[in-house]
Length: 64
Image (cartoon, rainbow, N blue to C red; front, side, top):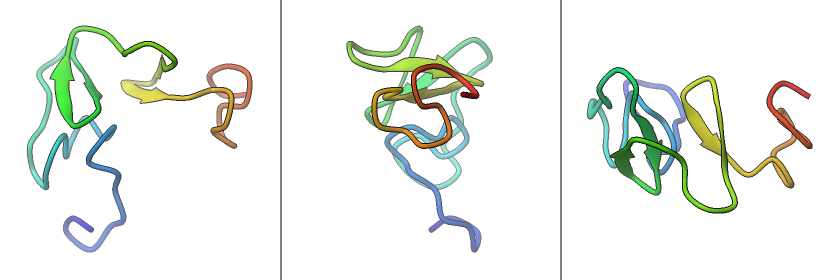
């Protein structure tokens, strides 16, 4: 929880690795670390790395 909101610090680009730690423009949050791209098995959807095989909001691809 950061500022009263539930976040996942493993993939939230505004709270990457901890509350208030934002990634720079063009970076994504992958496993709690800001990086230039998502890791194997994840896809970037609006700046967040998600596993599209299990994410209910991005099932099979971003926004699906």
